[in-house]
Structures are given as structure tokens and as C-alpha cells.
Length: 321
Image (cartoon, rainbow, N blue to C red; front, side):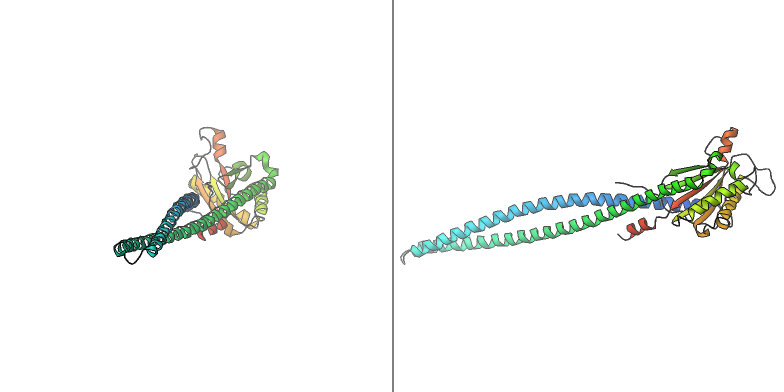
């Protein structure tokens, strides 16, 4: 069973702008870590299946070894019986039957050598059977180990998934008073996305958060203070209409400054730990609607607060095995 989950966001400096190059590098690191996690989980499942096949093969080989051993033991017993019969026959011969006695003695010697050969084959077969038994025992131990790791990993992933769902419910409850302002809370790819429209937070072209927006951010920070294992990433997004102001050069600057303003309010007013939050600007690069209509541009002018539970326990399970 393959379970794919994301990794924790890396905290960035919150009181200065974050360059797109550094942000993209962190995203690439996150993606490569997710791929590594999925690959390790796949490897666990594949190893589990492989070990089960190997155990079945070893068991089949053991059955064949048992048949070989049984046949060798039967053959040795037959030789022993024939030897005893020959020895008994010798006892019945008189002193005048030397030639016949020599012939029988040669036959006995031949049978003794055959018995020795069969005993060697039997010893080899027994040694091989013991080696297969040890191999089967080791394979079963490895299977138990892998199965235990898979179960532990799956349990931790289920726990994480449940924690994210509870986190989403807590955020929805904290922002219940702002639903009419088009605040959205979504669960995607193991993360919770809080989507705040521009009209809640900023006036057009401004980087100062409105009082109503500050109220929403403080409530959100209070809820997150109860979820200490959640990392917070603030992303500013704009439409494609060029900026005309002198202090703000373009939409990229606007998105970065807005994200930083939001992060500072959550830290200073909401008492959220600065170590848990990063601020990033994406400008007009990730629209969610067309920029050809006023409605579409309004949807693109937004702030996304991305909440990611830490994956320390999952990484510990993978690294320790």
C-alpha cells in the first residue's frame, strides 16, 4: 500500500523578503523529500512481497530436501539389510568354500563403500536442509521487521492525516465569523490551505492590513498556538495588473511585502513563534482564475496561509530502519 504524504515546510527569515530563487530551491528540496519518502514506502512494500515469495521458495526447497533425505535413509537401510544378510550367509559357509567367501567378501566391501557414499550424500543433504532452515528463519525475521516498519509507518501516516483533518476543523471554527468575506479553508495533499481574499486584508495596492483582516489573522494565530507541531507558510498572490506606485515596483514586490506584513501581525499580535512561520511572495505567477475579468482578478488577489504538520516521526521511522 502506497501512501504519499508531504514533508514539513522549511522556515524562512520573516522580517525580510524571500527571493524566488531561494523559495523555489526550498520547494525543490521539499518535493525531492516527498519523492524519497514515497520511494522508501514503495521499497518497504516491495521488500515485504519479495520476502514472502522467498519464504515460499525456501519452504518448497525444504520439502524437496526432505524427500531426498528420506530416499537416502531408505537406501542406506536397504544396504544395511543386504549387508546383514551377506554376513549371515558367510557364517553358514564352511571352510571349503573359500572362493565363494571371497566373492561374498568383495560384495560386502562394495556395499560398505556404497553405504559410505550414501552417508556422505545424506550428511550433505542434512547440512543443506539446515542451511535452508536458517535461511527461512532469517527471512521470516526480516519479513516481521519489514511488516512491523510498514505497519508503524502506516499508523503514523493515519495519525498525521487525522491531525490535519482536526487542524482544518479548528481553523474553520476560528474563522467562523469571516465566512461572508469569502475566507476559505481547504485540505489538499496533506496540508491545510487558508485562503484570504484581498478585500479582507488590504486596500488596493496597500501593504497595510485592515483592522478586520488583523482580527482574522489574530484569531488564526490563536488557533495555531494550540498546534505547536504545525509549520506556517504565508504566500502573497496578485493579479497581472501592473503597479503604478513609486514605493512598490511591481506585483512581485507587492506580494512579498503583503506576506511579510501578515506574518508580522501573526507573530507580534497573535504571539505565534517566529520559528514556525515563513513569508513568501508569488506575484502573479500562480493565478487561480482568469485575469481577463474583474471577478477573476479579484480571486487572484489573495493570500494563502499553508499549514503543514511536521513529519519528524515519519522520517525517524524511515531512518531508523
